[in-house]
Picture 1 (cartoon, rainbow over the protein chains, first blue to last red):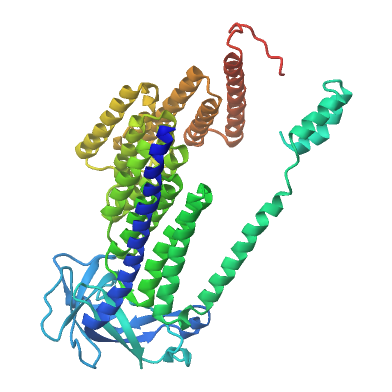
Picture 2 (picture 1 turned 90 degrees about the vertical axis):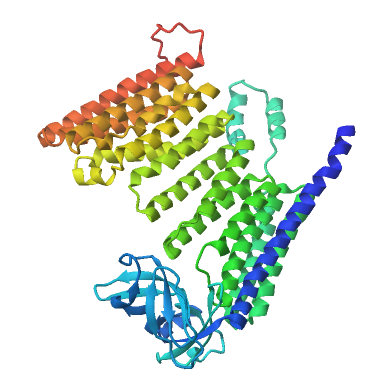
Length: 180
Length: 417
């Protein structure tokens, strides 16, 4: 009887407090991810990237389109790294015209993080293809989840787009707006 | 024995005078027919349909929902699943409770992914999803739950696959959390199913590491045999043995592949890591495993290591194929001998299958080039028939000896035939 009584206060504590703390931590984490989104918009460097949608007819079945960025293909001459680039390697792309309304251009693709001067921005990406003269790059921004009110839903004719991206000082990036 | 069987067979028992009609009625009363099982399933199916309907409404309108609405929807379902889980666990319905907590864990990962998607946010390393693995390990500890631990193994596999395939980097933290966190849980609370799941999950982590680091694939067996050695040290023999299943299967398939394709030097060359480093690492793991076997008195399983003999250092071609076949035979023989000693029917079947497998590989490998086609098939058929006759005889004798230990071993009594 005594052991049963002794066991009672301990067991509910373990089953109440720790799991509740864990749930709270998870909720905070999800809120933190959302917060990182807002913080990237507020604090990040603005860059405009030129892109074209790959296929707008897919919007009938899915809620995203694939964007083809102008900066997704760069000449091999712009590679700055100790060795030759390899597929799936993660890279740092130095871009011009941070904050300007014109579309950004690639200054160089680096294996290690370069220092960005004023008016420049560093966007991270991965090498997808190594061709003899060019490099294929991926930025993780290719899938654009199209909001219900977006102009992309108005017509299925693919026109050139201006994709406004914000790059946070800690490296995360997000699409803020897509317009024509 | 099912109720249906009792219903159909019992009248014959009465007719044969085995039981009386009264006894038959007693037996029938003792095993009442199950209440129509579908009725118990109806509320479950109903709530599943309601949940699916809610899910499809949300999915259809997801693009139209403002970010804040999406966020609150995700968080409320996350909290709801956990709250339901805790509620049922406190009421004593642990299975349902843990199931709901597991659902909450899945929803946590889904929330991370969907919130990143909502804000079009790109992460460049695994830190975002690593939290999912951390939460899984922590929940498995908090609830002392094998179900949650097994779920976390799958989450870890998914996160690591994403890291290596999409981000091009290996998340050592994920592998360490699975090996250390869940490994410790397994060590303290051994369990058959969790052993196999965790062991297979760790092998998956090791395989992805080999793929990402462009190492020779034979390096895979160093971490794999570390898992095996952990099984040797596990105080609970059954759990240890279950954990050793996946590494052994991997090693066996590898040896089988070597026997089948080892002839071409190009393939064997793909497998040759630097001799000293590889053999040194493997020998260290072997020493660990042997020490564990000795400590726990399981030296009888030592022949498992036969499969790890590095035959691929031999020159490719016939010598390699034959050496591998000898190893396969020795391994199958060791399993048979162990089964014979322990009198275990399952082990005996396994040993027989391995033995027949090795014979088939040897036969196809070695005789195809030398024999006429008809002679090839004739000889193969005779070989298999002879083998099956011999092994059946042996099996029957062993099982008879195990069933009736008092029977004299020399008596050739086979009444079953």
